[in-house]
Image (cartoon, rainbow, N blue to C red; front, side, top):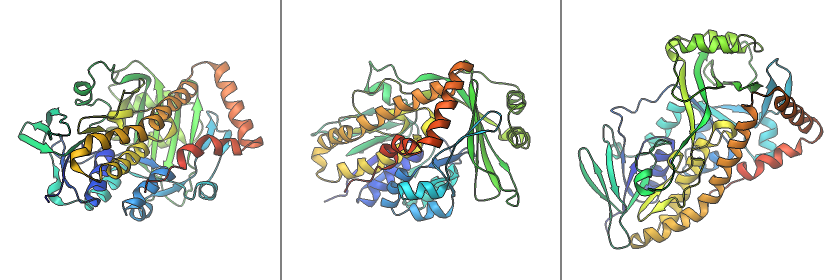
Length: 388
Protein backbone atom coordinates (compact mmCIF):
# COMPACT_ATOMS: atom_id res chain seq x y z
CA UNK A 1 0.00 0.00 0.00
CA UNK A 2 1.32 3.44 -0.93
CA UNK A 3 2.07 5.68 2.00
CA UNK A 4 -0.59 8.34 2.61
CA UNK A 5 0.20 11.85 1.43
CA UNK A 6 -0.39 15.08 3.31
CA UNK A 7 0.00 18.60 1.96
CA UNK A 8 0.78 21.22 4.60
CA UNK A 9 0.05 24.85 3.72
CA UNK A 10 2.55 27.08 5.55
CA UNK A 11 5.92 26.40 7.15
CA UNK A 12 5.46 28.17 10.48
CA UNK A 13 5.66 26.36 13.81
CA UNK A 14 2.20 24.80 13.44
CA UNK A 15 2.81 23.63 9.89
CA UNK A 16 6.21 22.15 10.65
CA UNK A 17 4.93 20.43 13.81
CA UNK A 18 2.05 18.87 11.88
CA UNK A 19 4.41 17.81 9.09
CA UNK A 20 6.82 16.18 11.54
CA UNK A 21 4.03 14.49 13.51
CA UNK A 22 2.59 13.03 10.29
CA UNK A 23 6.06 12.03 9.05
CA UNK A 24 6.60 10.14 12.31
CA UNK A 25 3.34 8.25 11.58
CA UNK A 26 4.57 7.16 8.15
CA UNK A 27 3.01 9.85 5.96
CA UNK A 28 4.65 11.42 2.93
CA UNK A 29 4.56 15.17 3.48
CA UNK A 30 4.73 18.13 1.12
CA UNK A 31 4.98 21.58 2.73
CA UNK A 32 3.95 24.50 0.53
CA UNK A 33 5.53 27.78 1.62
CA UNK A 34 4.80 30.90 -0.42
CA UNK A 35 7.97 32.73 0.71
CA UNK A 36 11.02 32.19 -1.51
CA UNK A 37 13.21 31.44 1.52
CA UNK A 38 12.47 30.08 4.99
CA UNK A 39 14.54 32.74 6.73
CA UNK A 40 12.17 33.84 9.52
CA UNK A 41 12.10 37.17 11.28
CA UNK A 42 14.46 37.52 14.23
CA UNK A 43 11.90 36.84 16.97
CA UNK A 44 11.73 34.67 20.05
CA UNK A 45 9.07 32.30 21.36
CA UNK A 46 8.04 31.22 24.84
CA UNK A 47 7.35 27.47 24.88
CA UNK A 48 5.16 26.51 27.84
CA UNK A 49 5.30 23.06 29.55
CA UNK A 50 2.29 21.78 27.58
CA UNK A 51 4.02 22.53 24.27
CA UNK A 52 7.24 20.94 25.49
CA UNK A 53 5.34 17.70 26.09
CA UNK A 54 4.10 17.85 22.52
CA UNK A 55 7.66 18.36 21.27
CA UNK A 56 8.83 15.49 23.48
CA UNK A 57 6.28 13.27 21.74
CA UNK A 58 8.07 14.13 18.47
CA UNK A 59 11.53 13.46 19.99
CA UNK A 60 12.69 17.07 19.64
CA UNK A 61 12.05 18.30 23.19
CA UNK A 62 15.63 17.69 24.30
CA UNK A 63 17.02 19.74 21.41
CA UNK A 64 14.64 22.59 22.26
CA UNK A 65 15.72 22.59 25.90
CA UNK A 66 19.40 22.73 24.91
CA UNK A 67 18.86 25.85 22.80
CA UNK A 68 16.50 27.70 25.13
CA UNK A 69 16.54 29.66 28.39
CA UNK A 70 14.54 28.64 31.48
CA UNK A 71 11.87 31.01 32.80
CA UNK A 72 8.97 30.94 35.22
CA UNK A 73 5.27 30.99 34.40
CA UNK A 74 4.71 34.57 35.59
CA UNK A 75 6.88 37.56 36.54
CA UNK A 76 4.95 40.84 36.51
CA UNK A 77 5.87 44.41 37.49
CA UNK A 78 4.25 47.79 37.52
CA UNK A 79 5.48 50.50 35.19
CA UNK A 80 7.68 51.89 38.00
CA UNK A 81 9.38 48.52 38.53
CA UNK A 82 7.58 47.33 41.67
CA UNK A 83 6.84 43.63 41.55
CA UNK A 84 3.24 42.43 41.25
CA UNK A 85 3.82 38.67 40.91
CA UNK A 86 7.17 36.90 40.84
CA UNK A 87 7.71 33.22 40.05
CA UNK A 88 10.83 31.46 38.87
CA UNK A 89 11.76 28.38 36.82
CA UNK A 90 12.03 26.14 39.90
CA UNK A 91 8.43 26.88 40.90
CA UNK A 92 7.20 26.13 37.40
CA UNK A 93 9.13 22.86 37.30
CA UNK A 94 7.75 21.80 40.67
CA UNK A 95 4.15 22.58 39.67
CA UNK A 96 4.13 21.58 36.00
CA UNK A 97 7.15 19.32 35.57
CA UNK A 98 8.95 21.83 33.36
CA UNK A 99 9.72 25.53 33.10
CA UNK A 100 8.80 27.89 30.30
CA UNK A 101 11.50 27.79 27.63
CA UNK A 102 12.39 30.78 25.46
CA UNK A 103 14.33 30.44 22.22
CA UNK A 104 14.66 32.09 18.86
CA UNK A 105 11.89 31.39 16.37
CA UNK A 106 14.51 30.44 13.77
CA UNK A 107 16.10 27.88 16.09
CA UNK A 108 12.80 26.10 16.68
CA UNK A 109 12.08 26.02 12.95
CA UNK A 110 15.54 24.58 12.28
CA UNK A 111 15.04 21.87 14.91
CA UNK A 112 11.77 20.78 13.28
CA UNK A 113 13.07 21.03 9.71
CA UNK A 114 16.14 18.93 10.50
CA UNK A 115 13.86 15.98 11.27
CA UNK A 116 12.01 16.19 7.94
CA UNK A 117 13.15 14.92 4.54
CA UNK A 118 14.90 17.60 2.48
CA UNK A 119 12.37 17.27 -0.32
CA UNK A 120 9.40 17.88 1.99
CA UNK A 121 9.65 21.69 1.89
CA UNK A 122 8.75 23.57 -1.30
CA UNK A 123 9.46 27.28 -1.03
CA UNK A 124 8.10 29.91 -3.46
CA UNK A 125 4.97 27.74 -3.74
CA UNK A 126 1.81 29.77 -3.29
CA UNK A 127 -1.41 27.84 -2.73
CA UNK A 128 -4.21 29.40 -4.80
CA UNK A 129 -7.12 27.13 -3.84
CA UNK A 130 -8.01 23.93 -2.01
CA UNK A 131 -10.76 21.45 -2.87
CA UNK A 132 -11.52 19.65 0.40
CA UNK A 133 -12.56 16.26 -1.04
CA UNK A 134 -14.52 13.66 0.92
CA UNK A 135 -14.48 9.94 1.77
CA UNK A 136 -14.52 9.06 -1.96
CA UNK A 137 -12.46 11.90 -3.38
CA UNK A 138 -8.97 13.06 -2.44
CA UNK A 139 -8.37 16.69 -1.62
CA UNK A 140 -6.78 18.80 -4.33
CA UNK A 141 -4.36 21.65 -3.73
CA UNK A 142 -3.75 24.10 -6.55
CA UNK A 143 -0.55 26.09 -6.54
CA UNK A 144 1.03 28.52 -8.97
CA UNK A 145 3.35 25.71 -10.05
CA UNK A 146 0.84 22.87 -10.39
CA UNK A 147 -1.69 20.67 -8.58
CA UNK A 148 -1.25 18.20 -5.73
CA UNK A 149 -3.62 15.46 -4.63
CA UNK A 150 -3.67 14.68 -0.93
CA UNK A 151 -5.24 12.28 1.52
CA UNK A 152 -5.05 15.19 3.99
CA UNK A 153 -4.44 18.93 3.79
CA UNK A 154 -3.23 20.70 6.92
CA UNK A 155 -3.81 24.45 6.62
CA UNK A 156 -1.36 26.44 8.75
CA UNK A 157 -1.04 29.67 6.80
CA UNK A 158 -1.49 32.03 9.74
CA UNK A 159 -3.98 34.50 11.14
CA UNK A 160 -4.59 36.11 7.71
CA UNK A 161 -5.14 32.70 6.13
CA UNK A 162 -6.17 32.73 2.47
CA UNK A 163 -7.63 29.21 2.66
CA UNK A 164 -9.89 29.66 5.71
CA UNK A 165 -12.29 32.18 4.08
CA UNK A 166 -12.88 29.85 1.13
CA UNK A 167 -13.78 26.97 3.46
CA UNK A 168 -16.01 28.98 5.82
CA UNK A 169 -17.65 31.65 3.68
CA UNK A 170 -19.87 33.12 6.40
CA UNK A 171 -17.25 33.33 9.13
CA UNK A 172 -16.16 36.93 9.87
CA UNK A 173 -12.48 35.97 9.98
CA UNK A 174 -9.78 37.54 12.10
CA UNK A 175 -10.38 40.91 13.74
CA UNK A 176 -7.96 43.54 15.04
CA UNK A 177 -7.42 43.20 18.80
CA UNK A 178 -6.87 46.94 19.23
CA UNK A 179 -3.13 47.06 19.83
CA UNK A 180 0.20 46.64 18.12
CA UNK A 181 3.45 45.06 19.30
CA UNK A 182 7.07 46.09 18.79
CA UNK A 183 9.75 43.47 19.29
CA UNK A 184 13.47 43.14 18.94
CA UNK A 185 16.46 41.10 20.12
CA UNK A 186 19.33 43.05 21.68
CA UNK A 187 22.73 42.11 23.11
CA UNK A 188 23.11 41.86 26.88
CA UNK A 189 26.32 40.53 28.50
CA UNK A 190 25.78 37.54 30.77
CA UNK A 191 27.99 39.04 33.51
CA UNK A 192 25.15 41.48 34.19
CA UNK A 193 22.21 39.25 35.21
CA UNK A 194 18.83 40.40 33.95
CA UNK A 195 15.54 39.21 35.38
CA UNK A 196 12.85 38.24 32.93
CA UNK A 197 9.37 39.65 33.28
CA UNK A 198 6.56 41.73 31.91
CA UNK A 199 5.72 45.23 33.12
CA UNK A 200 2.18 46.63 33.01
CA UNK A 201 1.43 50.29 32.37
CA UNK A 202 -1.54 52.27 31.10
CA UNK A 203 -2.49 51.17 27.59
CA UNK A 204 0.35 48.74 27.11
CA UNK A 205 2.97 46.36 28.45
CA UNK A 206 6.70 45.84 28.00
CA UNK A 207 8.65 42.65 28.55
CA UNK A 208 12.15 41.21 28.57
CA UNK A 209 13.08 37.55 28.10
CA UNK A 210 16.81 36.72 28.27
CA UNK A 211 18.02 34.11 25.77
CA UNK A 212 20.99 31.76 26.08
CA UNK A 213 23.42 33.62 23.81
CA UNK A 214 23.97 36.92 25.68
CA UNK A 215 20.93 38.43 24.02
CA UNK A 216 17.49 39.48 25.24
CA UNK A 217 14.14 39.38 23.51
CA UNK A 218 12.24 42.61 24.18
CA UNK A 219 8.68 43.55 23.31
CA UNK A 220 6.20 46.34 24.00
CA UNK A 221 2.56 47.01 23.10
CA UNK A 222 0.35 50.06 22.64
CA UNK A 223 -3.27 50.81 21.77
CA UNK A 224 -3.19 52.29 18.27
CA UNK A 225 -5.32 52.02 15.11
CA UNK A 226 -4.58 49.07 12.83
CA UNK A 227 -2.13 49.53 9.98
CA UNK A 228 -0.11 52.33 11.53
CA UNK A 229 3.62 52.75 10.98
CA UNK A 230 6.29 55.20 12.02
CA UNK A 231 9.22 56.53 10.01
CA UNK A 232 11.49 55.36 12.81
CA UNK A 233 9.94 52.58 14.89
CA UNK A 234 12.82 52.60 17.36
CA UNK A 235 12.31 56.31 18.00
CA UNK A 236 8.56 55.81 18.34
CA UNK A 237 9.13 53.09 20.92
CA UNK A 238 11.71 55.13 22.83
CA UNK A 239 9.22 57.98 23.21
CA UNK A 240 6.59 55.63 24.58
CA UNK A 241 8.93 53.99 27.11
CA UNK A 242 11.04 56.92 28.26
CA UNK A 243 9.48 56.99 31.76
CA UNK A 244 9.28 53.24 32.33
CA UNK A 245 11.52 51.52 34.87
CA UNK A 246 15.12 50.61 34.10
CA UNK A 247 16.44 48.74 32.16
CA UNK A 248 13.53 48.86 29.69
CA UNK A 249 14.46 52.19 28.03
CA UNK A 250 18.14 51.21 27.93
CA UNK A 251 17.41 47.82 26.36
CA UNK A 252 15.31 49.22 23.55
CA UNK A 253 17.79 52.05 23.05
CA UNK A 254 20.51 49.47 22.36
CA UNK A 255 18.56 47.91 19.48
CA UNK A 256 19.62 48.38 15.89
CA UNK A 257 16.88 50.50 14.23
CA UNK A 258 16.31 47.91 11.51
CA UNK A 259 15.83 45.16 14.12
CA UNK A 260 12.78 46.81 15.74
CA UNK A 261 9.78 45.12 14.13
CA UNK A 262 6.14 46.11 14.48
CA UNK A 263 3.17 43.75 14.20
CA UNK A 264 -0.52 44.51 14.66
CA UNK A 265 -2.31 41.91 16.80
CA UNK A 266 -5.22 40.10 15.17
CA UNK A 267 -7.24 37.23 16.59
CA UNK A 268 -10.07 34.90 15.56
CA UNK A 269 -12.51 36.26 18.10
CA UNK A 270 -15.51 34.32 16.72
CA UNK A 271 -14.84 30.56 16.89
CA UNK A 272 -15.00 28.66 13.62
CA UNK A 273 -17.87 26.15 13.38
CA UNK A 274 -15.26 23.40 12.90
CA UNK A 275 -11.54 23.00 12.35
CA UNK A 276 -12.06 20.78 9.33
CA UNK A 277 -13.94 20.41 6.10
CA UNK A 278 -13.72 17.21 4.06
CA UNK A 279 -10.07 16.18 4.12
CA UNK A 280 -8.83 19.63 5.17
CA UNK A 281 -7.83 20.50 8.74
CA UNK A 282 -7.00 23.97 10.05
CA UNK A 283 -4.49 24.48 12.82
CA UNK A 284 -2.56 27.16 14.63
CA UNK A 285 -3.35 30.79 13.90
CA UNK A 286 -5.35 29.84 10.81
CA UNK A 287 -7.85 28.13 13.14
CA UNK A 288 -7.67 30.05 16.40
CA UNK A 289 -5.29 33.01 16.41
CA UNK A 290 -5.19 34.57 19.87
CA UNK A 291 -3.61 37.60 21.49
CA UNK A 292 -0.13 36.93 22.93
CA UNK A 293 -1.10 37.56 26.55
CA UNK A 294 -1.20 33.91 27.66
CA UNK A 295 1.91 33.00 25.66
CA UNK A 296 0.00 30.11 24.09
CA UNK A 297 -0.09 30.89 20.36
CA UNK A 298 2.81 28.65 19.34
CA UNK A 299 1.98 26.15 22.10
CA UNK A 300 -1.54 25.57 20.79
CA UNK A 301 -0.23 25.19 17.24
CA UNK A 302 2.16 22.51 18.49
CA UNK A 303 -0.67 20.75 20.32
CA UNK A 304 -2.76 20.91 17.13
CA UNK A 305 -0.08 19.23 15.04
CA UNK A 306 0.44 16.39 17.50
CA UNK A 307 -3.29 15.77 17.98
CA UNK A 308 -4.03 15.94 14.25
CA UNK A 309 -1.50 13.22 13.44
CA UNK A 310 -2.84 11.03 16.21
CA UNK A 311 -6.44 11.24 14.94
CA UNK A 312 -5.73 10.60 11.25
CA UNK A 313 -3.37 7.68 11.88
CA UNK A 314 -5.66 5.02 10.38
CA UNK A 315 -7.72 4.26 7.30
CA UNK A 316 -7.25 6.89 4.60
CA UNK A 317 -10.86 6.46 3.41
CA UNK A 318 -12.13 7.80 6.72
CA UNK A 319 -9.97 10.89 7.06
CA UNK A 320 -13.07 13.18 7.13
CA UNK A 321 -14.45 11.19 10.07
CA UNK A 322 -11.09 11.35 11.83
CA UNK A 323 -11.02 15.10 11.31
CA UNK A 324 -14.35 15.44 13.07
CA UNK A 325 -12.72 13.88 16.12
CA UNK A 326 -9.82 16.33 15.69
CA UNK A 327 -12.30 19.23 15.78
CA UNK A 328 -14.01 17.73 18.84
CA UNK A 329 -10.66 17.45 20.61
CA UNK A 330 -9.28 20.88 19.76
CA UNK A 331 -12.09 23.41 19.23
CA UNK A 332 -13.43 23.68 22.82
CA UNK A 333 -9.96 24.04 24.35
CA UNK A 334 -8.58 26.56 21.88
CA UNK A 335 -11.78 28.63 21.63
CA UNK A 336 -11.76 29.00 25.42
CA UNK A 337 -8.11 30.09 25.35
CA UNK A 338 -8.80 32.66 22.62
CA UNK A 339 -11.45 34.23 24.86
CA UNK A 340 -9.35 34.02 28.03
CA UNK A 341 -6.40 35.63 26.26
CA UNK A 342 -8.65 38.40 24.87
CA UNK A 343 -10.02 39.10 28.36
CA UNK A 344 -6.50 39.35 29.75
CA UNK A 345 -5.52 41.63 26.87
CA UNK A 346 -8.46 43.90 27.65
CA UNK A 347 -7.26 44.22 31.25
CA UNK A 348 -3.57 44.79 30.57
CA UNK A 349 -4.17 47.15 27.64
CA UNK A 350 -6.63 49.32 29.58
CA UNK A 351 -6.02 53.08 29.50
CA UNK A 352 -8.03 53.57 32.71
CA UNK A 353 -5.93 54.32 35.79
CA UNK A 354 -8.79 53.03 37.95
CA UNK A 355 -8.94 49.70 36.13
CA UNK A 356 -5.16 49.44 36.16
CA UNK A 357 -5.05 50.04 39.90
CA UNK A 358 -7.62 47.32 40.56
CA UNK A 359 -5.83 44.96 38.18
CA UNK A 360 -2.41 45.41 39.76
CA UNK A 361 -3.72 45.24 43.32
CA UNK A 362 -5.72 42.07 42.67
CA UNK A 363 -2.76 40.37 40.98
CA UNK A 364 -0.40 41.45 43.77
CA UNK A 365 -2.69 40.17 46.53
CA UNK A 366 -3.20 36.89 44.73
CA UNK A 367 0.55 36.50 44.27
CA UNK A 368 1.31 37.15 47.96
CA UNK A 369 -1.68 35.73 49.79
CA UNK A 370 -2.95 33.00 47.49
CA UNK A 371 -0.17 31.95 45.11
CA UNK A 372 -2.09 28.76 44.41
CA UNK A 373 -4.64 30.84 42.48
CA UNK A 374 -2.05 31.46 39.78
CA UNK A 375 -1.38 27.76 39.54
CA UNK A 376 -5.09 26.98 39.25
CA UNK A 377 -5.43 29.65 36.57
CA UNK A 378 -2.73 28.20 34.32
CA UNK A 379 -2.93 24.52 35.28
CA UNK A 380 -5.71 23.65 32.79
CA UNK A 381 -3.44 25.11 30.08
CA UNK A 382 -0.04 23.77 31.10
CA UNK A 383 -1.27 20.35 32.28
CA UNK A 384 -2.13 19.22 28.74
CA UNK A 385 -0.52 15.95 27.64
CA UNK A 386 -0.31 14.42 24.16
CA UNK A 387 -2.94 11.78 23.33
CA UNK A 388 -1.96 8.13 23.27
